[in-house]
Image (cartoon, rainbow, N blue to C red; front, side):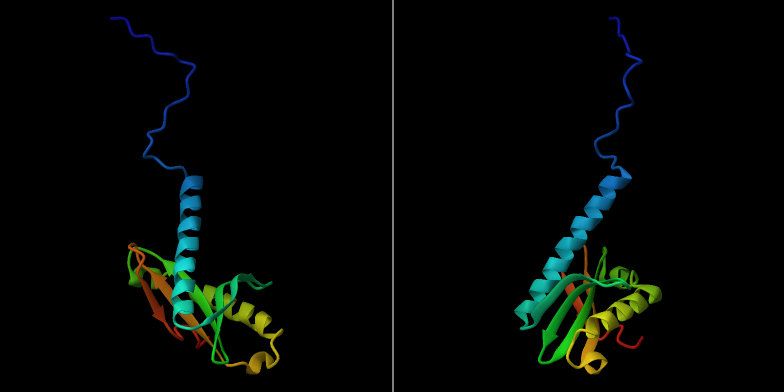
Length: 139
């Protein structure tokens, strides 16, 4: 049996191997799904969704809700476990979210006097959700 190997073919990538761009797209869509699940969770508990991925000059806020006169700014993090997801919120990111929230509050009737809190919504690998109310309100 005579095998001829073509030298003009590019190397074949194993189908399980994922390119960096594929991984980025998967992370993006996984994050979108986590945000949608968190939004449903808050709405099911009676919150009003005001904004989804609100973009200010200082940064983005994943979700903004109102509940009995309180604005709730929510950062969503997804990972294998709740603790791993929580560890993904850096101090610098929390500060950027606070700055973006200040921009958002500039358009509210009470401005910076508006009652508010900053929640961290965590999603694990099976899609379970844990809400940590006021998790980074202290910045």
